[in-house]
Length: 129
Image (tube, rainbow, N blue to C red):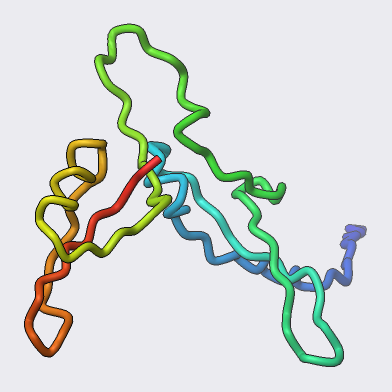
């Protein structure tokens, strides 16, 4: 006599994990840290305005912190480290002598254009920090 035993288990088909859409962080890439993948996670929704709040997460699911130029390790062999200097002041002058004084004191020339009916040129200069 042959007795056959079989076990039947009722298992639910597992749902595939939702793959989060990841993309490269442009801010980190611009600071010299390429291939930092980020995704967006819904945090909440404002019931009055309907605005959805999101937070940045990295591939491990923790909150993403942007990398900056200051985060770069100091390398003595590197001769220069380029940083973006922000504009702190803008000047529009009509006289060449005044524009030359500003250029001599560290301002940068941006552009010039005729701004009045009499076509008096205006020189646009910026001061960077």
